[in-house]
Amino acid sequence: MSVLKYLSIASLLFFCVVNVAQSQEEGRIVFTDPKNAGDKMLSEADLQPRQNAWGGDLMIGNDGFGLGVFYTMIFAEDWTSFVNLSFTEVKDSRQQEYYDYWGSVYTPNKVNRIFRIPLLVGVQYRLFSDEIVDNFRPYLNGGVGPVMLYITSAKREFFTSLGYGHTKYAFGGYTGIGAQFGFDQSSVLGLNIRYYIIPIPKGIQSVEQGELANANGFFITLNFGIAF
Image (cartoon, rainbow, N blue to C red; front, side):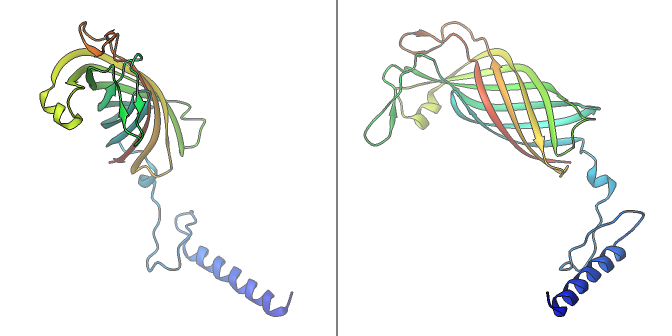
């Protein structure tokens, strides 16, 4: 290696050492970006978990896709309470779906579309908080509450039928396991696997073959939100 290369490396190392030394404050070393005009230090408050959060859910399950919103509040060490509202379709296991030449789906034995809209209150317990680093935060959760079932005719076009539906009510809940990811305590990014258990009143029919037994469902839920 030429002398010029050695000098270049030495100059680079000297620059890094000087930059780190100038950024050292209260016993902590902070690496700064030379492109930034001002030095920023990550405080202890930035690393503390926020007490509240809200956001949305993208749900993918055996009944298709769904959407939800949530609000959470930490009330004790490792314990968080939440309120969750979601909207998903309920499908009967006897439902028969076919695809035409153009890729459209039609279900000849379907008589009603049924949507589950649960408003659930529950708790979330963080697992292994003293043993796992904070960028991976596993937890158990579960909630209970009222469930509105909105029933529309499958004979009508989807959006048109929404204006002609009727409601039934039930009580249910879900149990789940999940995790949140990342060191950034100001945002929420996570994955939750949950199973809904929702008994329903008799007389609700989705397909021609008979009544719907329940509105249970399995979902993988992606969580996105903001903590404050």
